[in-house]
Length: 497
Image 1 (cartoon, rainbow, N blue to C red):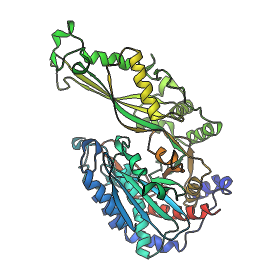
Image 2 (image 1 turned 90 degrees about the vertical axis):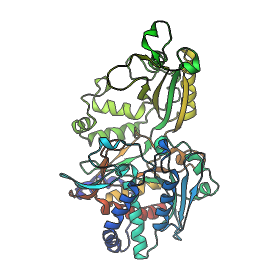
Image 3 (image 1 turned 120 degrees about the vertical axis):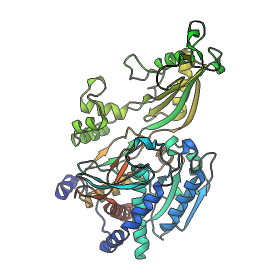
Image 4 (image 1 turned 135 degrees about the vertical axis):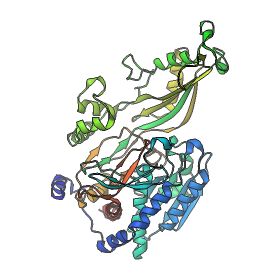
């Protein structure tokens, strides 16, 4: 595996030269010795969930994040207040010539314990046949597991008394799962923005390996806007203020049907393509290089296994795999997450609901912006006679893109090559993270997702993260920590080449 990866990357070595990690066995021994403590730290972190949508553990989560940073060697760490959930800012001055930013999210998605095979906050370690031992818990892979792995790397430096090869600036938020509503306020803080300005780039730790052991380097991500469309008789006068008997449907307007009709105008008759006026006005087409990267990624994937994992039989429009993946990267979307209103219990209740709500997310591609998307949505509804539908935006941000020749990406490629891990570069992830707060103004820094290891189930029951791998192709917790150590040395070397 290692020889194949090295051969595959040989053409890239001119821009991704491999740096040596001094006295690597010493750091490796420290990581191994700290394994149990490092894993316990992750379990304790999972046990305290911050859920922004529920305002759960808002202050407690920020304080724990601050303590985790200080314990890992950051000389200063402070809570940054916002109009919503606070963030955390920390810095580690190693006396190095170069600085890198690290982005953490310490919040997690909601969960229903009844849907889990073990309690979601217990962080139980279970056997995964053919893969090894994994922690099961909310936030295990998204993102506390990878972040705890990076913290383990810092603890190895601390345990050996060694200085890092780069200085670090950490920014963490507790609202990523509600589309980073107030995170720009953290970045704009007069202490935070100047510190980020000294950085080569910013990365978020992630578990980037697939079941085959191959990793993915993501050069960009779609933006995301979360909002609710609300049809209410109390607001628009076109229906009841409260639920009434369904027999009155003959003489009273239905807020539910009004919302359904409004929703139907948002997509074409295919039920898929956005139909909002001007929606594609600022969509930048994929470049030839991006198409090439997508094709290379498709060649490395198992389409049948991917479909099985998604629980689908075919792609939209019965397109072939490559065409569907090009669409996935290039097309902005309008998605219904859920519909809420009226009676949803067993059987019927014969009511005419007075209020119904659609939970919507919009995925954006370059050069779309959050404000543009929301403005066009509102204008579209008004034009089609649905100006009374309330548009309530709960959070969001635009798309992000980073140059593959930036020091951040070149160091990532070199670290993967050193680890003997095959990889593909993804032009753009269909999923979203608030990288645009770093790549966009005023910071304008390279930003990406970095890491190895494996996990799955983000936002779903039985979310898991591998801590002890039984496969030599896939990293466990300790191998993931060593990857971050190597990556930091690569960053220091790459910045000076």
